[in-house]
Length: 366
Ligand SMILES: *Cc1c(COP(=O)(O)O)cnc(C)c1O
Image 1 (tube, rainbow, N blue to C red):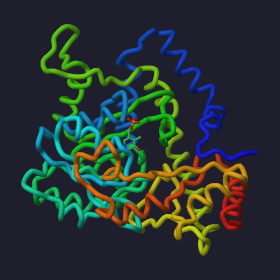
Image 2 (image 1 turned 60 degrees about the horizontal axis):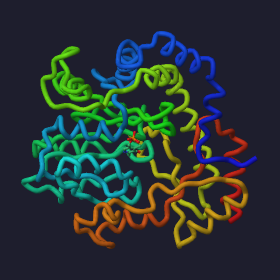
Image 3 (image 1 turned 120 degrees about the vertical axis):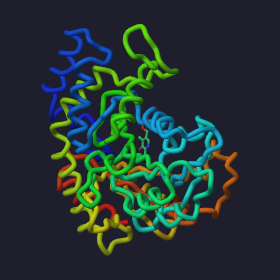
């Protein structure tokens, strides 16, 4: 039996009655836009994050765009973020007409390097977007300290990190505002596009609610120019059915990761490094394959029916869409090396120990 990178069908099979009941409830009530399903999920997801507010949106990309608007990022401003991430992290910055200022990563954690953030600050810097990449929180204390002393906003890109912890604090509660994605393959995934903003700030949450729904105060009165960024009630109901399982799913991901790391220590690949004060949720289990062997190992695993991924082969500073930013190959050597060496092994809570053993054995036999 082949082993996929993620297996969304296995998850549905395990919770089918709950999901089907949630979908039937929404269709039966014909209440598809906002309403009880959305507000209940918002309350429950805020509680899960241990945050005050959650505002449901139609994607993580919309969350990043809104977060920047809420932090008053304007054309010509600069926003610092990592070059080693999914393209959406920096898209909102460019859409506003602000400048993404990219920085290199810490070669051990693959998250943005706080010292590089400090060096990238200019008088035009308005905000920092740390990404909790692969489900492992970025090194937040020094980032928050830099932001505090320079009066900058911090927007967490927590799209891969639902439930991850940094010094006991959950991802999404450390900056001014945090962005979550519920893209189907994320640790908490909808059956389509969905996302959310999380914040402890009453005013930011109120403005986010206004902006996601056409600047609407009530049915017919609109206060400001807004967006159609609402979370679907159907997706909210599905997410609400899944949320009670999330802590257990994340715990299983951690157990799988620990087992992989045990089986792959002293092999040809470098397992993830996790600082002791961090509890990741392994959206992705990423290994590094040094000495130009990544693509060969990938083909070897494929021949044994094991699917792998690469997150991400092209860093943002080398993406064609960002050519106008003027970066060149060689600007961020750590990120470039990880782009060439990273390999994502199958990771989903339903993966069995026996499958993990088969995958590790296949890696060792290369
Ligand atoms: C998935 C993801 C996003 C975008 O989320 P969508 O819901 O797909 O728009 C943003 N940032 C990171 C790091 C992601 O992994």
